[in-house]
Image 1: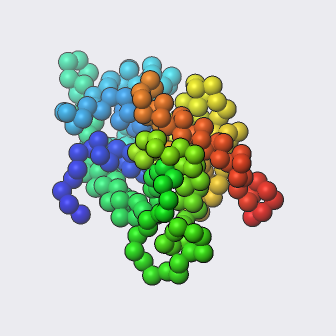
Image 2: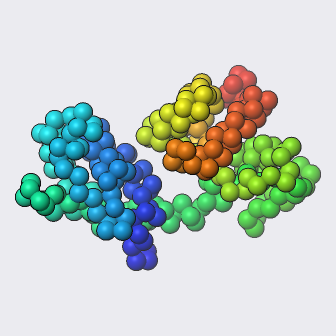
Image 3: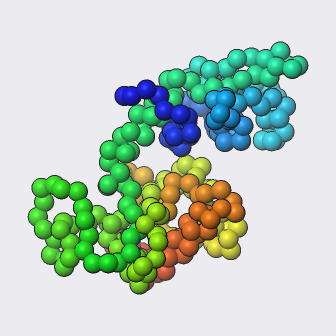
Length: 250
């Protein structure tokens, strides 16, 4: 593995591994995610929220915050305790967790052609990585498409010429916090939550949803508006082509 990347580049992978740490209590995971999402300063490479700020933001007692910090110390954060006056306690993601998140990011990049698929306008033909396989019987394809690739091609039909290649389908497991964030953003946009909007599917042994990205973009951003439009197209596509499970299949 190469030298450690800036934390901003592996923050999502760090959070993904955090929420799957079964040794941590749900409250401890919440505290760690709050510190990183709301207070981490990427320029200074640390966060320094006070116990009082954390407890008020999350609606928990300071003792609960202290217990959570004790669980996180060493494995998830390198913590420098302040004196409670002018010097606040500082939190830096541990080298161990940083390296593990970077390794996950690099593994994802290696297999991104299988797990991350661009929504491209239908302009005829479809490219795929070179590999040993039998040609597909479908016209205009060099190899059998994965389920996500085939779905994306169909969604892109009828939108030729539009600039949607920057949007990508990512599988978001129902069990992680990003699925809840997606539901919140969709409801804010006047849409039903995920469970009522899209069918829950199974991928790599987990249940979840195919969405434009692992997590929604910041509120009010152009990227979020584009993501919402992509979800609407997904909804229309699913309505017209329901998965086998919705038709009484597997």
